[in-house]
Length: 362
Length: 267
Image (tube, rainbow over all chains, first blue to last red; front, side):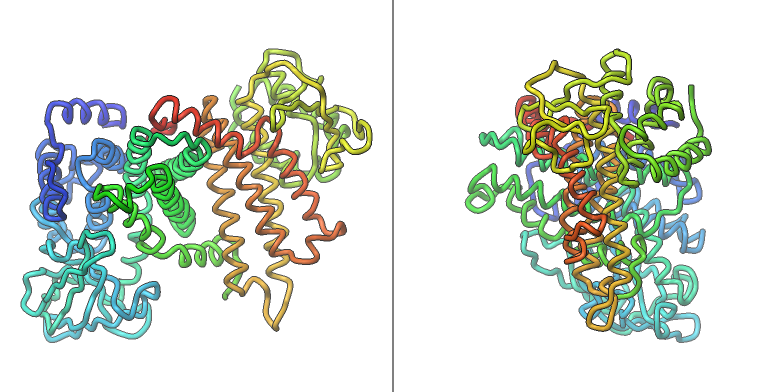
């Protein structure tokens, strides 16, 4: 199936099958809606394109997933941030889980039966992820995990967790597991956030027993697993997010009465720039390129564009963020995090300086 | 006629050598001998970006934007045509060197034979904007390269400037701007795409000028260092066929008129 056929079939199907969300704006409702959308798209087959048959997919190029996500974002069917989590979780399972485990589990995620989370960051390990200290100790065929994760998106809804642990010193001492969230010893405490959507949580692990067969890759593969996520996060996920931001620019154009051509033009130019860059990244990926540090450029462009767009919205809809309880407030506040999550703007610039400009060590 | 990647690399190599030793009307002549007219008419999408980017990277100049605009107008190349400049004004880019009018109206970039003229006739803009966008991106790369070398070589407080995060982040920001602009240039097909690409490229070159000038410190402010030539060129080229700020405003006006944001690049 090529992009044009896929898009035509998908849009016709979505026109026939109304998956638009209800009026409820709570996180519970968003997550429920996400499950509903995934389930419907999976059962109709659309969610299965671009994934290999070994995990229940129907094959075809990965770009079909970007097309699907763009359509979901453009129609506002699911919150784009949590929708796109499949783009990092599924490739991780394909690359690192035992084939039987991936075949068993991935359809549960893609089919909207389960939510999963990623246990990466810790209170002491944010930008410096490799310093993480959640411990996993081997006991016979099992591993026993003790420690704490934080900023774990959707942990309170998740049935499973892709968890990074420390099994030895250094980068080569990080080991990943696929952990059932109902295992004894796991406590989830949602965090209140600035934008009022409690989408992430602290997760405590107190002597949690994980079967050895749930290890992702081999002992010490965890850092590589985390690095391998980036190209996925920065291809289809970014394309989805850009599509979402265009819908917000459209909404701004509908709602504003200010005729500020400079501000609107600048917001549009920033979005257009990241769209073009993201498009080129998708194409390189499709041609078989291995994505690397150059995707930090995409990340900086996206975060900058997102913040500029919502700064512009706040300027051109005076008082709406400050005085009215509308989605603009939530989304404006959430945009403040765009230069923090997924690697801060500073970390991205460090990577660009070191790896792309070859400036040597700091 | 099509041209493959290997042929383009070969062409770029030849062009780079030619531009290293020729500039102005001499380069104009040399490029004509290399087949510039055919490049423009028969493989413009492939070759124009290479030619203009290399003008920027090498710091050479030639009056080729005339040809791009003339060709887009369906007119013979090799002459001149009044070109719109920022603020609704007009300029002429002479094919001869050193064509300067009365003192005081010389261009900021004194190497360019560019002068104000009273007016001109409307010309097609998209192709010229895309070409100049590539020139600006190349100029940005030239400045970044100079600043990078300086940051790596220059030692203060017992360590290279490049080891200071404030310096590194300025250079990183410059690369982001240039690569973003290049993405818009590669995607530029229609009028709006070319307008946006010229705006992005102008903005990138101005960003490069600001950060690279700062990183180069005192030496970058002297005439004996090459930086000032690229900085001057960036400012002058930004205004030609519409400045970044004017084009950005024009895009904003279009969006406000039509009430939605065009998605120009599709998967």
